[in-house]
View (spheres, rainbow, N blue to C red):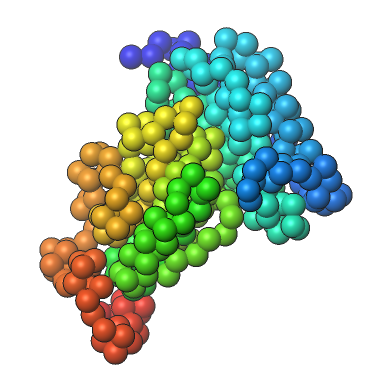
Length: 314
């Protein structure tokens, strides 16, 4: 059990996280408005770096370590140390969008203590949207509580799928095909951290990436979990240092997405799936909610059922 002083310090860290991510957001937005491609370089295939990435990380790192000198820091651009208490940071996620003038990018900060993500923030300064979650205390967008979508039909589902050079294109395309065969819509918007935040607030129904770095996903996974969604056990199947596969989804469709992507769900997510989804047994037994039965339905049947599904009369 935490002592009073430990609890107070944790609250201070959470408050400081909200403050520093907004300050970094001001810096990032100025860079975006002034000239998005300033200092543009490439770290690797489809892996962009701008001067703003480095400046944002330096601001966040220096601010946090000055305020909490006993903590460690692990960032995308400069790396760092991973101690018992570590801040895991992506200073600009969606740099390709940022560099091309597309206002779909964010800053992601997660605080991890003894291997457990205690709180996390994802901030899109272009839209002034700040997502925040604390373990056991829920998730919010600009201070308002958010929940995952209640979607329970695969052909009414939208999944975002990230792409990584660490995974063979054939494997990526196989999973995309499997998702399409379920009847889902598959899209990619270029920011994994924001994609997870969009699952948390119901804008998307799920997110899949076959390899993702910890700085991109830890805050977002906590957001989804605290918003009532199902997530993979990232720390068990991946690591802070090397990353791993990521899955987050609305409870009613999570199991089918997990089967297609071959990414497990956490045991906590499985046990809470029925309670979070609120589905009746009738829905669970409905062949339209079974991924493999659904995949076998032909296009004519899908078109006949779709109006009822989308209006909730099915």
